[in-house]
Length: 314
Length: 283
Image (cartoon, rainbow over all chains, first blue to last red; front, side, top):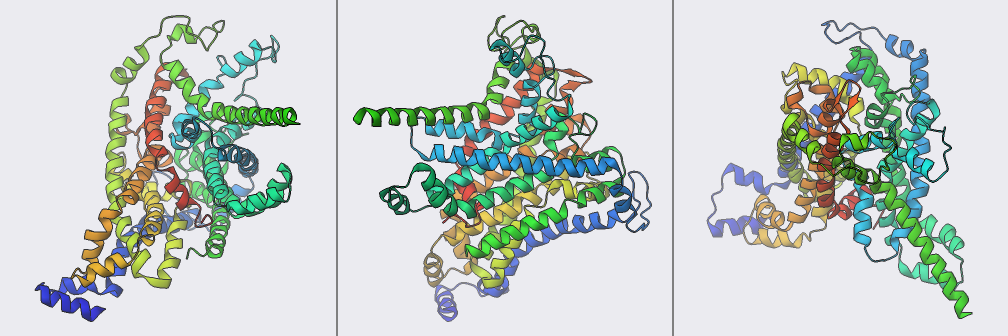
């Protein structure tokens, strides 16, 4: 093959420069084409990651030039505070509840969208909106919908008689309600992604498997739980992993809706890291807080690796 | 018997319609609400006795006028577009060759590397923004849009490389072999033969990267403080609120304009993104 190409070049009279040599040597060309991307990732993701590790054991603050080594003081200091413990608990409550809801609702919606009906393209477009729209802007839409005075939800529920004349919940002002609202907005935002992933999974199940179940007289529920769901499981795990990563590490919804309030009841690790490290200027402690997200990402990464291995894309 | 069947059929269709309608309203209502609010007078918005679904006073364009003339919204849109275009260029320059190399030139270890690159997509801004803010200051890029151009490819390149790798793998390698027998070098075959038929894949990466740039919030909030340098996703939530006063009409107009058009474009490419997202769990 190599010889044939060389021959062809000689016949065509192409100049045999050093560059053309590289252009044909695949063991050089591969790394050359891959190199810039790898180098960039190492510099802009790898290097800051190690910097974060280093900051977390230092005493760096915004505005100070010192970078002294303080060991695990930031970690031990921060673990003891109630602020941190609440944030850690909230992160789990927030991520796990929202992803449970997303999985259940996503399955229902994907099943409903599997069927063909008129106007399906429009429905799909509308359902995708929350995922594609900039998250900070979509969240502002919700901020207006749950406004303490002009909430359209409260107005409607009062108009239809579900809320009495004196009942007017302040959605973001009461601890449990605020957490519920934050979770609902996150479900709203991540449901489209889970749904389209599950939909792709559903349409990849061969039709004859469904036909066989139908011929055997399986009821809808039996068909779903014993045939469809097991086949959908690997795809559902992918949807769950993405959802968990996005939910565990997001701070935008909380920053826009509550800033962690009321009384830190919606503060999560990511937002606490921001308020400590950037707004508060304590870079070392902020870095230490955000590093608590890392074990979680590692677990998600291992999950993805196992799926990729099993499905043999590699 | 036939009637019973028809009733059951009718009920099933009704339930299906109900489920689809409920989810569609849940997803789209905030955007519908943005649109309504955009054209309502403030006195109409701020009257609790008014039915919020109806216009009690004539619609107005005042909020749009305020948005475009009295705030820096136009500037934020332009900033976002500039950063978006530059990030797309950087992403293509880095990810197109890398995707091709992973698909064709690197064999077994390249496949492992491909997964590794994909996984860096999972590293969130909230883990890196503190050290990166110091890096940005160190390079003298604080308060400049260039800081975003430098950092945003860190989340567009990994996923784009992964998408393009899958895309290039799907092209039969006979094409390049034939081109190389005709005298093209490997690089020439890639540029002249493979790239032109990969326009769809490259366009997917363009849309994907641009959408991510529009959505990004944490880095822009951290790196940039002058109002005139903000991108739209940070400018709207931060600067259309003065103290405790929310300019709801202009806010909602700003949100709607920056959200819906890009979503319509994105919709055409969504199946390709999903093929990338599912890491091969869907065949």
